[in-house]
Amino acid sequence: MDSQAVRAAMVRKLEAQGVSNPAVLAAMQAVERHRFVDSALVNQAYEDTSLPIGLGQTISKPNVVARMAELLCHGHADKLGRVLEIGTGCGYQAAVLSHLSREVYSIERLRGLHERARENLRMLRIANLHLLLGDGMLGYPRGAPYAAIIAAAGGEDVPAAWVDQLAVGGRLVAPAATGPGRQNLVVIDKTAQGVSRTVLEAVHFVPLKSGIA
Ligand code: SAH
Image (cartoon, rainbow, N blue to C red):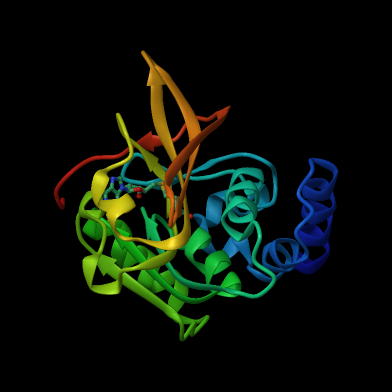
């Protein structure tokens, strides 16, 4: 597969869908999504679809990864500082984030996926990405405060620990329940004046669960 060309087509589609941040588009062009999916799904790796990554979990659509990254980078001319990702999954989004920030901590609660992500990322040798096995509902206090926090799994509400671990001037983007069977993307900004919360479009993420398995 000429993956460079297929990714360029994906990036053009992302632009047509409204993604405009040049750093985000460059990161989407750079990270080889097909390396993170099962060999049987390689042909679908650049389609705008979520794909199974094992243990009942899914890798988000390229459009959702780019949209969330763009929301995180909003207002930053430079790279983000320290970023926390909850839900490493296959490691794809973590790799995208590593292009957009100085340091990424990515936490996963399922050992099988944590190990798969480590395997997927080994060849890429991304020096600024730290993979952690743990319950991301608690955040990761040792890396706090974070310039940005992003979650790839959605619960009833955004855990208070995440808001606590956000730096002043930082932004959190996560799916959260907004009604029975309804989930929306939520943006939380922390400023010296306080915390503001914006509810955006409806989304469908896997559930946020507590504990390690
Ligand atoms: N960003 C990932 C998407 C993975 S799907 C990727 O690019 O592949 C979301 C992941 O969140 C799943 O792997 C799930 O196991 C994980 N997850 C759910 N609750 C969690 C928690 N409390 N802590 C850490 N990871 C969690």
